[in-house]
Structure formats: structure tokens, C-alpha cells
Length: 255
Image 1 (cartoon, rainbow, N blue to C red):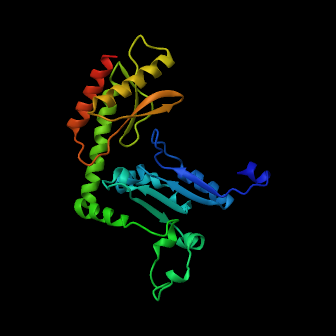
Image 2 (image 1 turned 45 degrees about the vertical axis):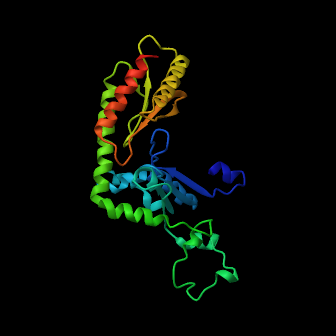
């Protein structure tokens, strides 16, 4: 920001990640927020996936520093049992959105203008789907306790799988587990060349997905090809995780 200002540019926005997609990395909200405040710029938190974990008391500490931020978003369709698409957007000052995005042609004027909240003025699209209804049904169906129980189960299952991978002589953890997200790599003895391991893990990912029982995705960590295992489906049970890993080990042994 100092360099931009020195070059005559005006910093406009700072975006912090809370649970980045690849490895679930968590930015230091307090540190970044203080910088945004010092430079008087808009600060936003992208908690797309991990934000759902904030319904758990034991993870509320992840919000340390949130008082510095102007907006916050998470996608309930990613880990809060809600069908795609549904994102929750929190803003400190809705007037900022309305002043920027509102339009009021004659055909949109009504007697109720100003007496009710026109959420069409809070985003780019004029037409809006009633996404909140889906989330309302989820909360009504499961209750807060039910949602918390499911997320805690996902995290516990991931912790147990993490321990199993850590104890394996054939597989390696490639980043610390974050909530229910694990990054691992197949690293059998006798295969030490990094590029060969990259190719081997790509073959493993394709073979696992071709098997059809489990679907995994890839990621690069420090330049190396790794495989992501994330637990988050509504009906996932321990037996599914166990069988998935058993199949992964069996498929790896054939490569």
C-alpha cells in the first residue's frame, strides 16, 4: 500500500481469507484489519467455506479482529447443508452498498420506497432469487444443535483420518489439517524424485475418481502436486471415510 501510494495509486480494498480453498489457510484478521484501518480502506473477509465453522463455539476465536472489517461473506452451500447456491453477506454499513448500487427508474418507484429494505439495492443484480428460504428450511430442519453436531462429526472424522495418514509409511500430510480439510500425497519408499511423485499422485487422483466411490481434487503445495480430501456432505458417516481411504490405499498399491 505504501508503494502504491508513492506511485500515485489509491489502494481501494483489502480482502482477507478465512479458510482459503487450497489448504484452508487462515489470515490474521487482527493484523490485516489494523493495516486497513491505518490506510482507511474498505476491508472484506472471504470465509466462503470455513465460515460455516463459526457456528461452533470452539472456533469463534477465528473471528479475532473482525471489528476492523466492513463486510464478511460465507457460502452456506459449501458446508452448511444448503443446496447451491446460497451465500450470506454481512455488511457493517448497508448505505455503502445502496449508495453504490441503487437505481430508481420511474417503474421501480412505489409508495413503500424508503419504508422497507429493498435488497435489490444491495448487489449488482436487480432480480433476486429467494435464496434465504433454503437456508431458513435448513435451520428449521436441523436446528443450531443439529448443524453443530454434523460439523463437529465432520471435523472429528477428518482428525481421525489425519492420524491414519500420519501413521502411514506410504502417504504423507502436505499441510496441517484445517477443520475437515486434509492435503496429502502418496509417497511410497523408493520414489523420491519430486517430478515422479507429482506424476504418480496425478495418476492416483485420476484412478480414485475413475473408481467412482470417492471424488477428490488436486492442489499444489510449495509447487508439489497434492490431493485434497474434504469431508462436508450432510450424510457422510465414519464408515464412508474409512472405506474411501481403504480404497485409496488399495488403488495406490496397484500403480
